[in-house]
Length: 351
Ligand SMILES: [Zn+2]
Image (cartoon, rainbow, N blue to C red; front, side, top):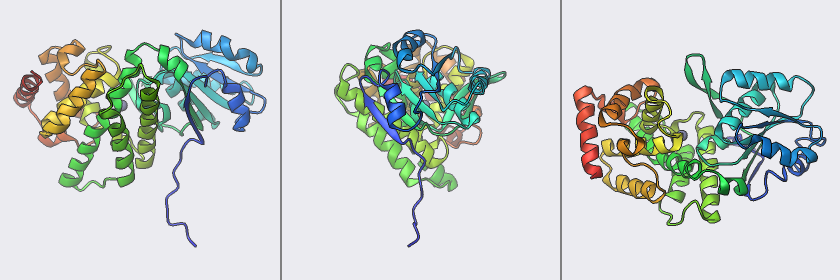
């Protein structure tokens, strides 16, 4: 009988629990990634040394690699380090930047990558995309999925609060991104992938109305799983479409115009609010606003440290950040006066 289904690339292992970093050597053996532990362990600059010290005795054949920045150059250096001898895998332990560099280098070196996330700042931990700096800005690069994804709740629980709540902003922005996708479907006939849309939307719904927060392990597990499902949605779609619409165009514009304003997830949350306002979906707007507020995330440009004029400039620049993506911004094609009026209306609505 023919198998009339599609095969989905996905990690072989997804585990969200305490103690994942401490058990990484055992996991590499159990999952047949590396029997001898001959791996390159990529760690970030902040917690990297402590993480390496805590596992080096269990991985005598491993070598550490410090990821100082999320750049193509750093990823190339990691790839070069892989060539030193026949390493079995790259193990990335840390936040999004470290994991992105590890994913890219492992893909280029043709070896598996194991992701051990220590915060939940965005949906990159299990996505087929790496976001890296190059000489002229920032690019998104297609990479292989991690072979295994571990989220260590011991580290997540002690990570700076903003690096965990940020994940909430990124995952609930899926609802705005999928709405943009359907808009592109209705207006331009762009096909919507039903499975990718289901994964992205349900990931967001799982988090949207919860009353508990990042202090609770139950919430952290749900958030981590939602971020993994978002990565799967992108893998199924073959693009970031289900998790990135006008919300992310605005965040990329803010990043370009006013670098360092806030983290990815918090910006995605505000971008999603504004895009949802533009689409006139007052019910979702209210729910998103309540959710972001509950987790202490910004809901206005002012809370991000941006003036009204700066946000208008970001809205105007946003479509250029993803020229091939049709969202409510491309749909409305706001000119300067239109963008200013829309932002003023959004701020009045936010009260
Ligand atoms: Zn995102």
